[in-house]
Amino acid sequence: MIGSLPRREREIFEILVTAGEATAADVRKAMVDPPSHSAVRTMLTRLEAKGMVSHRTVDQAYVYRSVPQAAKVRETALQQLVKTFFDGSAASAATALLGLTRTLKPDEVDALQRAIDEAKER
View 1 (cartoon, rainbow, N blue to C red):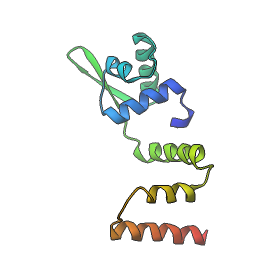
View 2: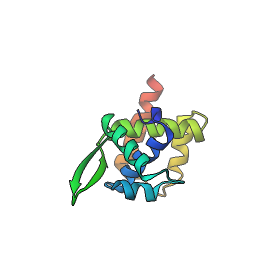
View 3: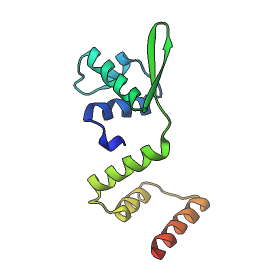
View 4: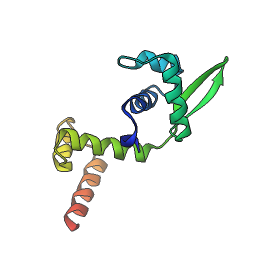
């Protein structure tokens, strides 16, 4: 779903995911080469219509937050990351991620081994 968003809407969604909550002005400040304030508000309204963000009113200002879609967001983001930086190879991405950590907890090792075993069976 995130991958199908226009670039600016995706940027706004990612800002909200990172920030937790933000006003339209806060979102605009965090954007690269931001459009007008009204354009940001329009894109937030579109994201809300798509069910990706919600808002609450605080002191006459709308405060936006991303709607929890953790599994869907993670999957889409990881697919894009693997496609862009690892030529579509999940194994290369996993190897690179493992290289970022010095130690793994026993339960993490077990989970990785289960995933490897399942991949072999497929």
